[in-house]
Structure formats: structure tokens, C-alpha cells
Image (cartoon, rainbow, N blue to C red; front, side, top):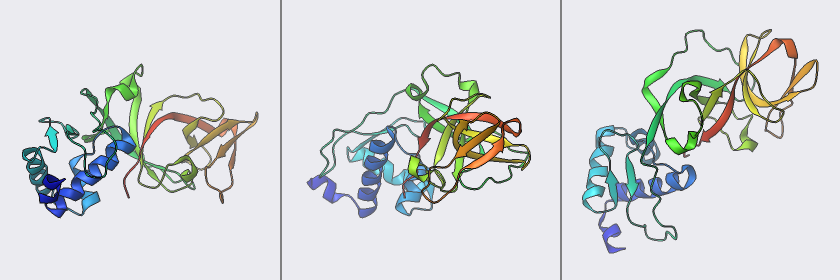
Length: 223
């Protein structure tokens, strides 16, 4: 407790955020996540404080991995032991944004951003061909009752088929738009169901609706 009190307020905030993030997601945040959550604009300043926390014995870091961090001692008021993230981390390409609201047009020039990939513990995608997986940032709040909010990241497996109740990304021919919704095949039409108490489902001709992928998991961004 006394060691924690000796830390700067900024360093205490970093540790508190990391503890919440790891508890919610099962893996550590990136340096950018930490900066955004604690009001630090410079990644070098975040890195400086992380190194200070390593010296103080609160943190361990693995070089060359943006999520290569773990808490090594409990924080004051915490009743949980520090979570040790999976050692093996995989990188998933970030390919753009997807609407969780009214459908929006998707530009044709989306590309896989491997300069800023999403890093995950390998155990989260056991049995999945990594060549079929990508990440997208959610735009909109139509899936809020599914615990998916604007700015969250979904991990999607590319597929052209889905079962009723699956959360999918679909392309709508007539609108030339894509959207994120629950999928229900009702014969000649498809019902795309939002998870929002005030939003109505979207009904489309089954021939005009093409599944692009199925959601595997969600990475929630701390607010």
C-alpha cells in the first residue's frame, strides 16, 4: 500500500486502468489505449511511466510487443490476483469500420492495416484459420444491448454463411451498404435485427443480402 502511494497520480491512474482493462478483456491494453484512457497525448510519456512502474515492481514488460505487459502485484483495494495474459500473442489486421446503426457506405479502397494491427492472445482464436480473421472498428450504437458500443472493435471471421441468431456483417446490394446486425433467415427475406430498444429491424430480399463475416469476439474500449 505504501509503495503504491509513493507513485505519482499519473502512474496510479495507469495501473488502475490496466487492472480494469485486463479484468474486462483478459489481455493488456496497448500504449495508445493507456494514453487515451489517462489523458496522456504522448506515447513516449506513457512509455516513460511504464518503465518507472517496472522499476517500482508493479509491472513486467516484454520487449517488442505492444501488449507485452502484466501486473505482478495486486493494487490497493483489489481482491483479485493479477491476471497473467497468454504469452503467445497474434496480430489481426484492422481493415476499417463497420456500422452498428443505419447502414453506411463502405469505400472500395479499404485495406488491411498491419502498421496498427490488433493484438490478441492466441488462445482467443484456437482452431480458427488466422487468414480468415480481421478486425473492424464499430460505428454506431445499434448493438448496444449486445454490449457493443461505438468505437469498440469486433473480431470477424470471413464467411458467406450464418445461422439464425449469429451476429454478422452483411452487404446489401440495393443500398450498396454494409451493416452489423443479428441475422435471421425468414425465407424470401432476411431480418437484420439490431440490439437496441428503440431501433426497428431491417428487412431485405434474401437475394440482395450477402454475409461477409461472423463476429467471433469484441474488444471493448474503456470510456
